[in-house]
Amino acid sequence: MTKRAAIKRQTRDTGREHGVLDSRQFMDDAKVRRLPTHAGWSPLPSNDDRDQAYLKTLKPKSDGQAELMTAIDHHNLVLALGPAGTGKTYLAVAKAVEALEAGKIGRIVLSRPAVEAGESIGFLPGDMEDKLAPYLRPLYDALSDRLSMKRVKALMAEGLIEIAPIGYMRGRTLNNAFIVVDEAQNCTYVQLKMLLTRLGWHSTMVVTGDPQQSDLLPGISGLADVAERLTAVPDIAVVKLAERDIVRHPLVASMIGVL
Image (tube, rainbow, N blue to C red):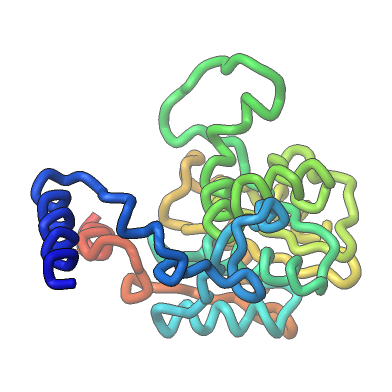
């Protein structure tokens, strides 16, 4: 018995020394432990339709973000004004996804002006979606952070998520929808008036922008004027975020303070 144990120990040590797995030590059925299949995760194909393993909990990182989230929950029209990096677009899109997943609204409509940021990119190839893709990329990024891209494409194919430029919003009535208007500082007063009047029944609209970073000529942006006029209107929330609400790199807040 001692001789047999010594041989087994020598074989095991030799295998470890040379990095070779000795399968003989696993031949005994008593040493085989099977994975439980009655509960928990299963490698069967039935679980392949999962989009992602977890969903990030949406929590405010500043008092301004908390105020914005509360305003979205209690008002059908919210204007979020603030510098870059305060999470205006992300929170608006995340709230839209949250409402869609909960069944509170029937679709998400994301709109953004197709205005070049100080440089001309020329004529882009492809159809309308290809031409508008660079302008709408921030909205896709926010969506993909809350949903998998596979789910985003499926919802867009079903018409439950729509991404459109400002010019395609005229004449529409958006009922049972969550509308997010991003980069509203690049909209004129007339465009914003047109957008705000698209609001239909059982819908929520969030307009985000930074009046200090307009890519239009001076005096053409209508965001600041519209926000000032709507501040006095009850049931409309105008949330103004500040430098202390910036959640990007600390240098962003420092730069905005001096630029």
